[in-house]
Length: 209
Length: 209
Image 1: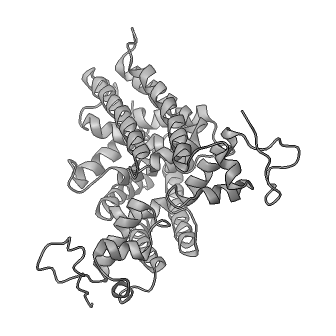
Image 2 (image 1 turned 90 degrees about the vertical axis):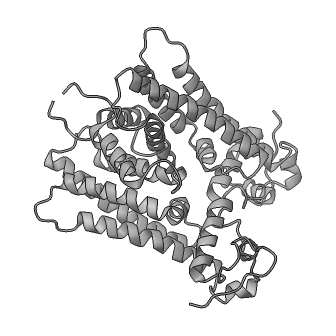
Image 3 (image 1 turned 45 degrees about the horizontal axis):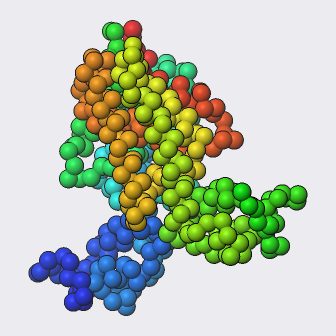
């Protein structure tokens, strides 16, 4: 992968760095999209942020939309892998066990890919790229709702709340991580995954049992 | 309150309407901010959306930031009332009872004020108005975390998850409503409030007890 030297105007990355490759430009773009909003961010803003000229950036990427597409794929590919693993044919595992596992794996994905998942969760469908991402999210949501329904049908989950609503609330709690989790924060991913699965499945209240 | 007739270019509201007052302009602005992003929305966009001229809008509001400030206050005033009611001195109520009640009331506020709460939850601190709103959110978060800590100290909540984390996850689940709830949807507010309190406090799993 080719690299590009930053211009002198914003040498923010410390000395001795070899410059920017496509992955570093993508990381900076995602950070900027999350901070300013995708629509409000221009390629000129990105160039300024990186201390590069616009031609130097276009040496690596064809458009702002390409950066968005790559970022959303990063999040969606990981989430799809987690959901596919949990919803596939798994001999000997109940739907309930697979649901607990997909919650745990989703937390791990959100923690490891927080910037791109944050961007994904803010997508509103303002372009073809965004609509395609929403389509993939919907596919994931449908799979997860079906898994919840299976766990209810097994008799493992309470049946007083509709499965589609359970799925929305459960993953609403999981997804809310991206709003405040940061890798230098107080919680390690395994502890977070434990906390979320315990709260969601076993509840916050101490039970008389 | 004065009203302004729409120009002929976008008569979207049906005949016989008296035009727009400040509240209607605010509602349209919030909808547009949520759809396009606040930074990416101009007063020209808002005028176009309403079929008004820009001077007609400036007859009612002084700036885009004033609209943002009013919208954020709408959400924050309601949430503050809910939290203050639950965290004040309430003879005879345990912290656990007050926590369950504030969860329920928060759901009601989110449902009744979904557009302005959505806007609030997306604020990132890009201006003085946004920083002031974040400050008020932080005050609410601190109050809620203290209430969770009290409920743990009472022995009502499990003590294996730190109270600050419980508070984040609990209200992360509540706040996730704004991403998908809509008033014409399948769930009525009381049923939603029940579902959320049951999942959060009693858990999804059927307990052997």
